[in-house]
Picture 1: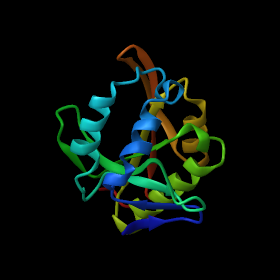
Picture 2 (picture 1 turned 135 degrees about the vertical axis):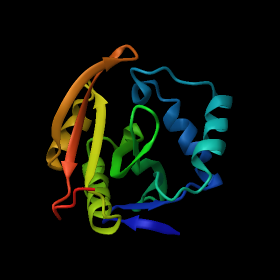
Picture 3 (picture 1 turned 90 degrees about the vertical axis):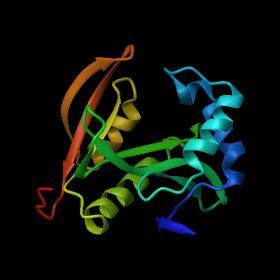
Picture 4 (picture 1 turned 45 degrees about the vertical axis):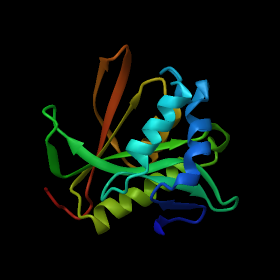
Length: 173
C-alpha cells in the first residue's frame, strides 16, 4: 500500500522483497562514501530490524514507478534533541537513492513531496535536513526546496551542514 506518490515515485512501507536492492545499494562504496560498506550479514540484520517494521513516521521504501523497482528510502523521521527526546512539530527530511538514479531530479521530487506532506498533512512547524559538506548534490536539493543553512559543524571525522525550512502556514510548533 502506498503512503505517498509523485509523478515518478511511490513511497510505501518496506517489504521483504526489498532486501536484495537494499543490500545492493548499501554495498556500493561510492553511495556509502565516506562511510564504509558494512558486511552483508549486518545489512540483512539492519533491514529486518530497522526497515521492515512499519513506522508511523520514518523513511519509506522508494519505488521508481517507470520500472517498478525499489531504489532507496526517503521521507521524514522524528527530530530529536541531544538527549534523544522527540521534538514536537519537527521532523528531519532524508533521501537515500541508489547511484543509478542520481542526477535525475528524483531526490528533489521526493523532497518536495515530503515537505508538502510534512507541512500540509502532518502539521509540522519545522523540517530540518543535514548532510556531509562534500555531498554537493544533497545540498543543492535542500536549497532548491527553500531550506536555509542554520549551522555547520564537525563530528565523526566529517564536516556537516544543517538546514531548516519553516512551515508556510505560520505554525510555531
